[in-house]
Image (cartoon, rainbow, N blue to C red; front, side, top):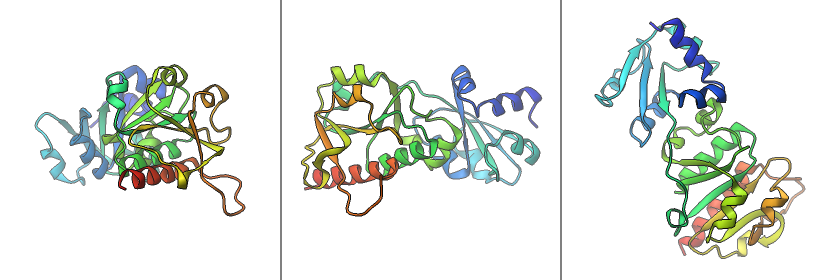
Length: 249
């Protein structure tokens, strides 16, 4: 059984303020918990109901596990239909970004992405295409928001999400800087080379002017139909796919 103070703490983690204060976040569901347990992330405690898979208890002797009631699970879960296992995971402190750590690969840079679902989708897409670093502006949605964690479907366990001053970061980088813009080179005829940063902009306003000025190569996904715009998650997937196709030539 959970104590009242435990319940209050776990419920509070639905808000960024308390995730930051305590340095932890929640992961829900067997698949995601298993993936985090077998990653570089550190699990503090796994909370399980009596109906959950007992194999989770054998993940690691170093992981604390606590059995809880269905009633307590409903109190701490952010889901309308709670799953029967929740993990309390420590927010990692990734090493500072350097030109060397990002060289010879591609990384995604997000400028003001607001929707948690979009961020979760982008993290999942990055994982699919083997991209290991997602670099976010300080006003991008929090990667440890329950909706982001859920939308990433476990992929967050393999992605390093960094929050930086993007303008300052881009000014010091030695890597090629690509940006998704309406008036740029056709993505399907672009040679991306073997490394770089790909900037995706805010859902409504795109890439802010101060960041746009730092883009070296503006890239456009050409429109063939009448849709006004592409969802940023879909656009990111197209960029990742083209980059992968280029590197496999």
